[in-house]
Image 1 (cartoon, rainbow, N blue to C red):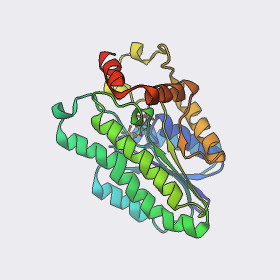
Image 2: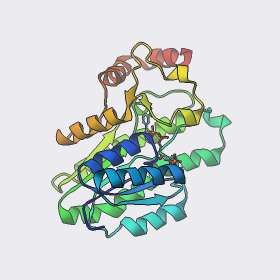
Image 3: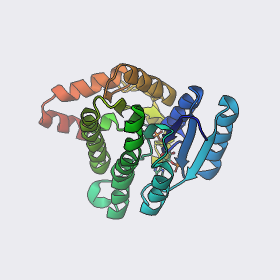
Image 4: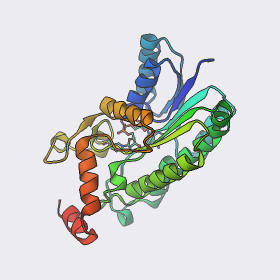
Length: 257
Ligand SMILES: NC(=O)c1ccc[n+]([C@@H]2O[C@H](COP(=O)([O-])OP(=O)(O)OC[C@H]3O[C@@H](n4cnc5c(N)ncnc54)[C@H](OP(=O)(O)O)[C@@H]3O)[C@@H](O)[C@H]2O)c1
């Protein structure tokens, strides 16, 4: 590998796989992570054949410090890493007090501690190169708290504010920071939560997007130097509507849905 590299976590499916295809299409070699071995290796093969790029697959559990540190050893001091997408993530379908606390701690690791460590490892080279892109996957759930989302929404809020502060700290370094906040996106995220097909339909102002469209909009935000990036008109509408609603009214509506 001696080309510029995009390092994308959680590329087995969904938004991470779309980012992998997009950056490979732009000529980047890739380092991708996932846990479903067969699926990610098959994606890597497809991508490297279609776009003629190198794809290195790392099978890693990103809540596990040992796995994370193995990756840090690979990415730190790698001057070719031009793009980092902290994409890996998942949902929980239990109220906070009913869920296993260890599983909730694991989510804090995957959504917060691991991205923080990867970003810290790549920034020095990016600063030296005067160039870099860091994209952190948040969600519109960071603006729209829901029951069963205590840790999910909370960790995504962290990513929003962390990314905004980081973007200001890195102003004039040539590094762009984006926090990408998709809404309802058709990926494997919902099947992992055992959601029914009927729950994945457009309903009123809830409009589902494809992961490719989410990534397309993320690229647009990068071009426009937009730090907080919310793909989809209806998602932006929903976020703004929630911002306008008094808290008590919001809680009443959300707990009744
Ligand atoms: N889909 C949506 O509606 C939606 C909306 C807003 C934000 N997001 C965010 O978008 C990101 C990507 O999700 P997606 O919708 O594309 O879902 P997805 O298709 O399920 O992909 C999630 C990726 O993250 C990896 N991952 C999850 N937990 C992991 C762990 N503990 N250790 C290592 N890797 C892990 C998965 O690996 P394996 O599958 O190989 O285990 C997979 O590659 C997430 O951060 C999610 O919170 C999604």
